[in-house]
Image (cartoon, rainbow, N blue to C red; front, side):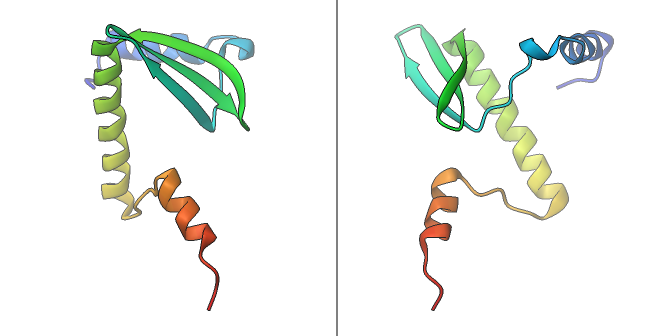
Length: 95
């Protein structure tokens, strides 16, 4: 995403939101209609917020997030495990 004045202004505006408008989540549930996606953000398996967006915005968000994660992995040399990979790794018993 380009670093420009509008981008910086949006980032600052998001940072300036009151705490009741900021959400941390460690889980999610997703549902889709032919035109939209609904994402229920969860904290410890309890819903904390719902996001509704068009498929176009959802696809762009997925591409942008994937790019950020790949950039992080490339710069740090650390691969981020998916939740399924993490669960499988944790379920292995030591030999």
